[in-house]
Image (tube, rainbow, N blue to C red; front, side, top):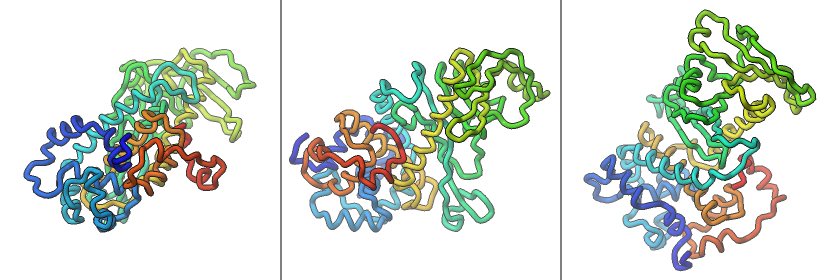
Length: 389
């Protein structure tokens, strides 16, 4: 990297301008723009994510006191909070969603060869949602309960690299299971789902599409045992059965056989019962696969702690979705840079280094070359997302 360029400029060199411009053109993002282009808007919001800015006034003030350095980093116009607020309010959030999806595709290709806790040839996903609370008086369009507003991020995480491959943003009222209606199903892939997603009509879509699911069985499941497999009880397994649903409705919604696996978690001494439509993998592998579902929970915890998606710069639905999608794009862009440059620090460490060096004229590799003490207290506290980033 050229040492005469700022670190911020070097980071943005990994952003494909051709794809960026295509996303902007698709939704006419720069139509009748006089002051703040879509690219400057993206730079300002990316700066807010990386530098930990908390408001539009905060962004404007910090960029102003930096003098000419923002220009050398790529900004071509001054960023005023009113102009940035209008851009977030009115420019189509799908620009940033499409950009994030393109970056996600790039990141998934880079991390496709990574291993995770289970030796599996197929792609494995974990799907869940997280709720971000909002003030009902300020965000009435996102009403969740009588005196509360919220949005939900329904997220599908690729367990190889822990890259979010699909995100669906809804109001808090939307039940989690409804997100299965818009979830893209990849034939041959495995989907780890929480017990809240047990809807046999929707689960049957996975079977019809040639995909596999692993979920927790609900209590009092009405079924008939058709066959029992021999198990090794020393591994924690208690049952491996082929079953058919008995309920008058459920048997019609899911007419095929299911596999029921009972397993005692040795860490918590808790019995877990899994349902899956895969009959080939060993029962213990199915149990280990479901345990990997926890990665999506850690992903939610991580982004809420280290990205700016809990306090929003705008009040409209478009502004909220714009901020969330740009935050995801920044997260994936940093993950791409880490892989491309073979950086040793964790993703948390990279973001912390970037927060204080964005406008320094230092080569990227040199900025991240300093070793970090792995026993540092801050690292222990913040490494809630165990991705070997």
